[in-house]
Image 1 (tube, rainbow, N blue to C red):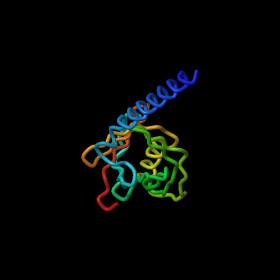
Image 2 (image 1 turned 90 degrees about the vertical axis):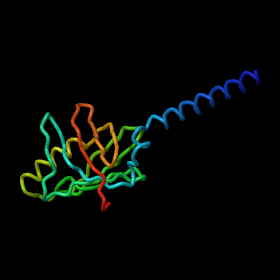
Image 3 (image 1 turned 60 degrees about the vertical axis):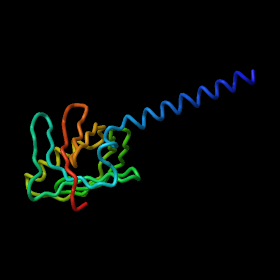
Image 4 (image 1 turned 120 degrees about the vertical axis):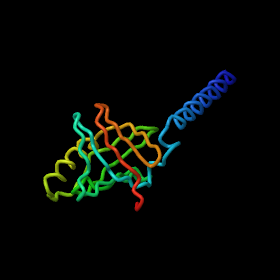
Length: 149
C-alpha cells in the first residue's frame, strides 16, 4: 500500500510539472514582447466593423502592472481596473474611471475603448512594438509601445 501511494505521488508531481511547463510555454505574447510594466499607446479601436482612430487631442494609453492592476487613459478620462494575464489572454475587471467630459470625438473613441476593455477577456498578439487585443466578438484594440512610457 505504501509503495502504491508513493507511485501515485510521483505520478501527480509529474503531471503537475508537465502541465505547468505547457502553460508557461503557451504564452506566445511573453516570448516576443513583455506585456506588464510597459506603457502602450492606443492607436485605434475596431468595434462592430467600424474603426475609431485615437483623436489627435487624446492620449489614450494602457499599462498593466505586475501587481495585477491596469491603468491608463481612455481618451478623455483616466481609468484603473484589475487585470489578469494568462498566456496570451488578458482579463480586465470592471473599469473605474474619472468623470470628465471632453469633445465629441474623444468621447466617442472613449466609449468604444471602454466597451472593448470593461470586464472583457481579450487575446493578445504582440510583435515589433505593437500589440493587438481581440475580444471574443472580433473587436480589436490596436496599441503601440509608448517610447516615453
